[in-house]
Image (cartoon, rainbow, N blue to C red; front, side):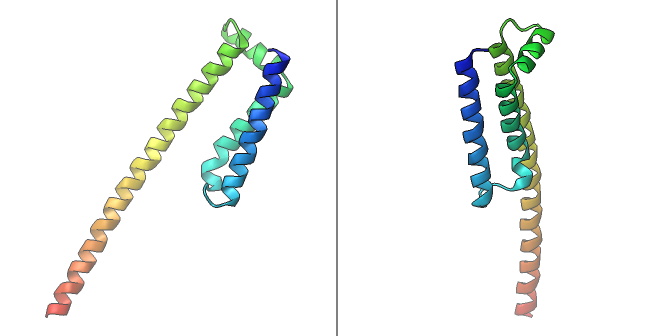
Length: 116
């Protein structure tokens, strides 16, 4: 891994970490939802400080270059993150649907009581 790439990765990781922290402070993100993002930025910092670690992992898994390994890790992370977010959205959609139905039933009962 070249020195320039390590510096770029370190800067991106720090900026990303600051962005996530600011989003949490401004109540745009919850700590529960941003934990994986904080872990990702910490991992990028560790990889940029200790380049031997991603190089050893890329050699172990049979990648020709370390950057290919890092791109592969990024793609796997994004796929997993996307699946998890889709699950969360599906569960929330179901809860919202049930809530709307309950509110409609309560509203209907109140209207019936008011007419009687």
